[in-house]
Image 1 (spheres, one colour):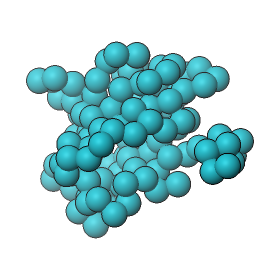
Image 2 (cartoon, helix red, strand yellow):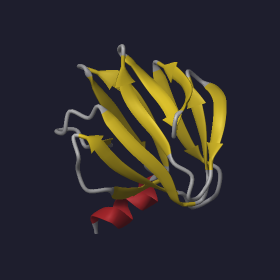
Image 3 (tube, rainbow, N blue to C red):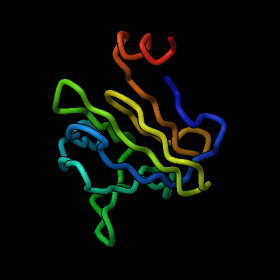
Image 4 (cartoon, helix red, strand yellow):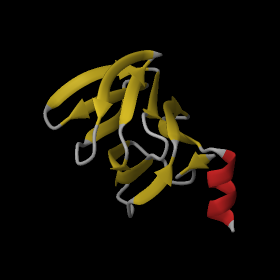
Length: 117
């Protein structure tokens, strides 16, 4: 499910609301994101730039955030443009499409159905 699709995202801030996430850049594990840790994803030079406060982790064509636990929820706060944060379950893929960040929530079917009822 494509999230924030109408917002022309350029920068987001993420943190696990529950669980932990392994972050992959171009299919290679680059770091693990634990509760209360923050990571920025920015659009820069047609790539997704991954960074913590002041430290660049890398630049990738595709970034995936994969939950390590049974139940994982990620809090996503759009910075550019500034929007209210939202919490989403399961896994995510972030890439660049049409000069904006494209975020796909790869939600499990049972979580998707529960969220729509």
